[in-house]
Length: 311
Image: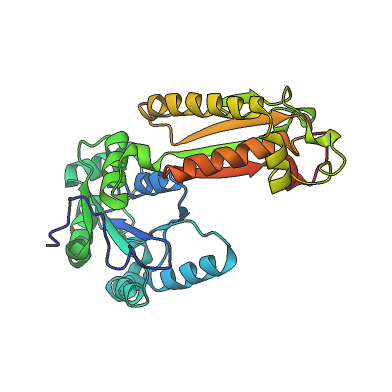
């Protein structure tokens, strides 16, 4: 049995030095909660795929990494639904690690009674059940099939009597090696009021009272993240004071939202056209929070839509 099973895993092979993002492979017993585990990683911003045959994992990872500029970590579910193809699991994992990918294998387990109960409640049959094979017999066969995989896992989680929140906590600590504060993502969104207020924001701050670069001939056609625009805007004391107040409010709110398991905190900053003031404030907030180690996603709604407006 892997000594790391059921224990926090902070470093995984070459994870600390690899140029590749982490790859989490979720496997385990059918009905134990693999789908719930995958949803946890999806909420954390991972690129997620369910029911992938082992031999295709490296192909998927390569295609994904080659198609995006800033790849997210990857999580895939690979289990007995692959049938005979699942025999390649150990080889697929070893190949990924040999090629430098930081791989973590998570095995999700549960007692036979728990798994049977879940199948009954969902009115489903076990994926390995064939004509004349009961759910209990299928579970027994799957456990035999999965024994070697369980022993090679970096983390084993038994979901018997485990709530979804507790499963999430175990995955965050065990796979990412951080606490809730470290993995909560801050989404900063600039927008223009003339195009409507975003409906997905937890906080909205109105920047329209700030001096407007739009009325400066040499700045009008530059985006808000241009150094000239930012230098001009933050030369006005009210911009810096407003930024400080926004940052303090966000810092106050984050730990309280985390207590209710909120994964993303979305903050909208709006000016008239969403081109200058809101963009500049979002970019400065990004710098400040990233310097503190916070995970930040930036969305400039009007810039991405190609819209132009007066500020």
